[in-house]
Image (cartoon, rainbow, N blue to C red; front, side, top):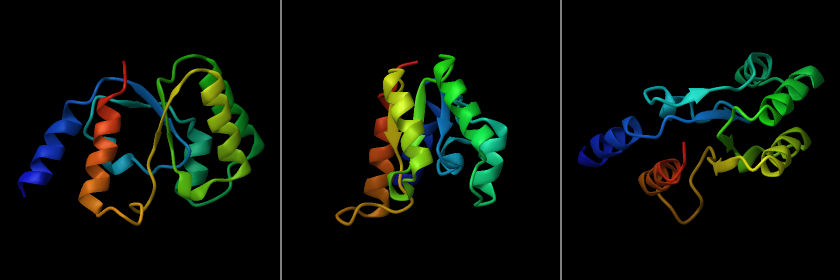
Length: 127
């Protein structure tokens, strides 16, 4: 239980940055932080319903990244598509920090180790 409350405290203390997600994978982690989700609504809605975002949703996401208001891209490497690859490349081109969060831990890690690694990566973000 101490591990969980420790991680919870660390999540609450994360820097106030603005993020966008290639899919809503970090919602459960970031819901109680001071971080702001800037993922365009249409794109987010499509991914929440497990649909394919429309071309206009992708364009809105790319524009959002290029506008300079997003500090970090949360990227799921386990569900890479042409669309998410384009988003990641744009983020890289814009100098946006990228945090990878997958749905399941890598083979050599248990859930807590993986979760702690993700939290550590988030803690390293610069507001």
